[in-house]
Length: 106
Length: 147
Image 1 (cartoon, each protein chain N blue to C red):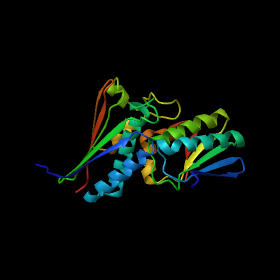
Image 2 (image 1 turned 60 degrees about the horizontal axis):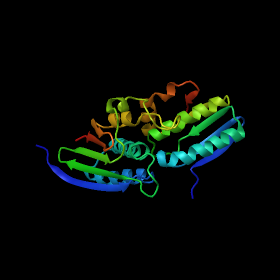
Image 3 (image 1 turned 180 degrees about the horizontal axis):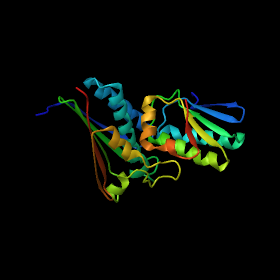
Image 4 (image 1 turned 180 degrees about the vertical axis):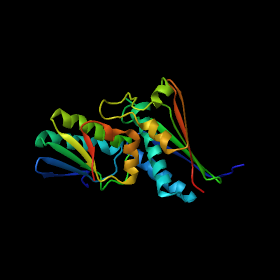
């Protein structure tokens, strides 16, 4: 099976590159693997990279918000990047980019 | 007067793999009206939200071997209007006005953000929610495609 998240590390930053559609069905496994890596690597920053994501619904917003919560509990920040105009539309609608502990990057 | 040019009905078990099935089928069906990429993206997302609500909320706690059913009706009109009606026979919504408020959720804390109805409302031109406690919910969405 194709991996749903590919991880890499750059210094104290953990990068999670999401590889498929994000909906309620796929988000469950993604959040389990991201949370496990967060605990294991204890980074200063978690980057969620959506470059490879074609479709996302509000389950993806839940995935981001839940990870911001988890990351802040270990003192880490979250950056989201690589979003298509489609995904940006959803992010803007939700206003999550204004939440503390999250930044929207390229 | 607008004339109906095509319609379909889809019945799916309320299991999460069918979120993407519902999106794909509706995309293919609406493609006949030659929508823009953005319009199709809006519809796919709105449908995904409605179907997810059936699975996560309406049929919450149902056993895996009896998951409940989701009924999806799509109609296309010559006025380039698309209507999508999504019905479940699940638990119903106590207060539909409250459920439609952004950030309201009864879902698992930290994982459901309470944005489903806001997305459906924002990505379509009309949304109505009819529900009866213990009997189920029908969500009706309408989207007018650009000429």
